[in-house]
Amino acid sequence: MKTNQAFEDYYKALYGGRWTNLRKALLEKSSTVPFLGPRLVLPYRMDPASLRAAESLRLAETGTIFDACAAPGGKSLVVASSLPPDALLGANEFSRERRRRLLSVLDSHLSDEARARVAVSGFDAASLGGKADYREKFSGALLDAPCSSERHVIQNEKALSRWTPARPRFLAQRQWALLSSCFLMLKPGASLVYATCALSAEENDGVAERLLAKYGDRAALDPPDFPEGEATRFGRIILPDCSGGSGPMYVARFLKKA
Image (tube, rainbow, N blue to C red; front, side):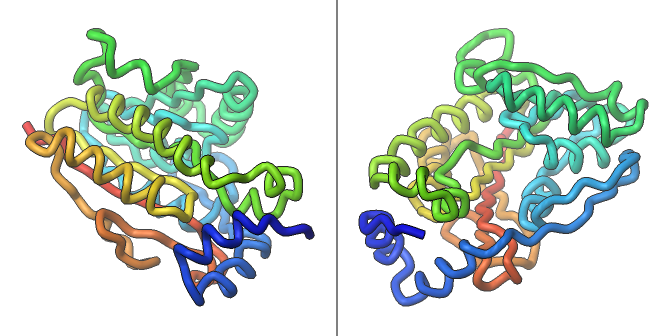
């Protein structure tokens, strides 16, 4: 496997002496477990860290929960399996190809009753918050944002060769647009979970901090309470070198004030 010195320098600067072991863990196969919620007809294998992220969302008793970037569908299955009786799920995926995968996962894993309570859409979630029809529409939101996905990059020579330090900066801008839009779409009192599989604070705490700075009088930090991983300034991060191969997964949780 070839290396990209800029990539190595960037993450070594972030993680110091820990980078050697973290890099080794990223090159290993990701840890997965079978998830079989009460409304699933087939188990779905997923990273335990992804399971923790989906479980972090506080589910409202009524209304529609919005999964903004839902493909391939594992987190949507977790939410759908725990929906209160009067709540619905909107599973959204902008990419047509990934949306086909999402539909396949939902159709094959959910019971008929549970599948009927999940609507699939193909919007660019970053644009919806600016539309009057979507302001304060949802009773909860989960944003598993597109990110650097260093585990994929480091295992793929083509992706690694194309990586530059501009990638995290570019993605952080996209993540901010998505997160801000999701916040605007929340009803007062609703829960918002922001998650990435990125390693850099620029894509994680940096985006969370931006939300609090812009909507500080309306956004309250509601730190996730799962025990795995380690605390960051605004959330928690599960890293594979200290979690038996699970992760990376960063999770921050917010509450929209009334």
